Length: 167
Image (cartoon, rainbow, N blue to C red):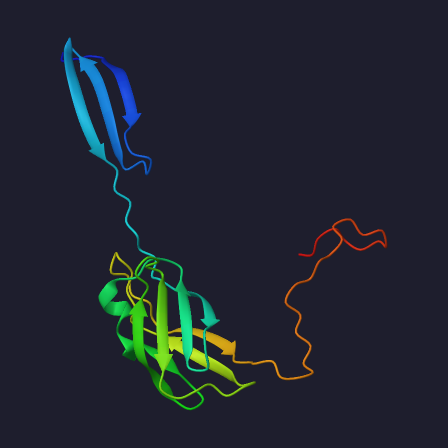
């Protein structure tokens, strides 16, 4: 009857911080074995628009949830703005932050108007494609006598019976 010899694990160590490369050393019948295992985890999540930042009356910056491929981020036909229907006339991925795309439109935004921006066909570095990501934003330039609130400082422990934090 054949009996499998007992293995004795000597060392198991992760070699990279991302935990994708692992060294496994074990002994079997007085023979030392070394295995280098690559633990592959693939990205299957497509990129999505995280936020929209208005830069000027015809420029916006789009922040995505992950880094984009250079070719797909630079394709201005993937960015469509309704209300004065227009495609972006230029789109460029940022040189240092690959999840940021600078865009410029041919016609200007109207003050106080809500816009719908549709982003489609943009790919991340793993070639996952974003399909019809829709974001809305309001272009608003404060005028004389407008009240603009840009910060609220709340008392963390109110004495008037309010909850400590909102949900």
